[in-house]
Length: 104
Image (cartoon, rainbow, N blue to C red; front, side, top):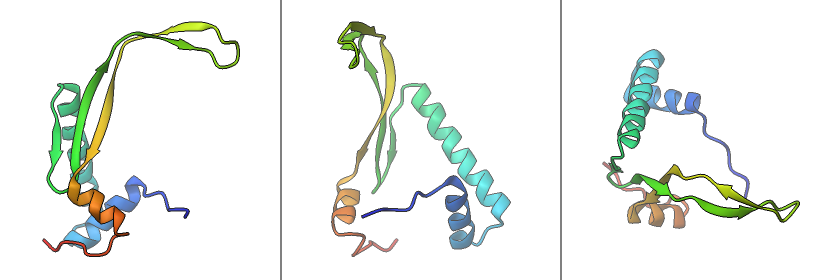
């Protein structure tokens, strides 16, 4: 089953339509929301969106990897990665194919 890619512009249009906002206002709202999320993650905080899921930053240690072409071992540097854990409600919603959406 091939799905459509939802773009930032699609989100802005949907927010503007559903919240009865001008497109520019919806764009500012989405931009600010994403900036706040980024800032929290950079600071090492967890971003919890009720009924949706949690975004966390995880520190990965240095490890040894392998070049798939040559088989040569190469060090992989330590880094921080963003992880997402969906809420139980989101998992159930996706499993049911979107049926039974909770009204808020």
